[in-house]
Length: 208
Image (cartoon, rainbow, N blue to C red):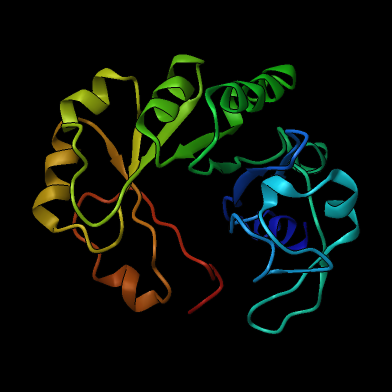
């Protein structure tokens, strides 16, 4: 939770990844396994019980202090509606799980304070259909869906890998899509982004 609150405090938009426990509880963790970043739990996140999740601790790969694991509900209790949050529903989520997450957002009336991401086009389209700002993620090449098809699905934002060529960025912006590349690590990376980019994702927004 500390990273989310710190980035919100300093004016950045907190980004987080949603995976699901064995009982369907949405939790915040990037990896689909516990081994790299959790102490006290191992194996697939989907195989963990809620008790195992709550008793585990997050360990920083870069050596920061350990932190308590966080569920989506706990994040929304802390920051929901206070700042714009940018959650990613990770690949592998079922349509029912996508709907469950969006139902939680509906219950808190968060339509105006979320940008919801997914690498899954159908999930991104569902997000848009449900009235949320949707961001469709993909790699360093244009996806099989054309820019026009992305717009027709109601999706407002796209998040390509930073290596997407400038001419492809231009093809996306020409149809009205906002482009926010991911994978940036330094201010130098930001400086060489192509024209037309509306934002970007970075692991360290405090880097000079």
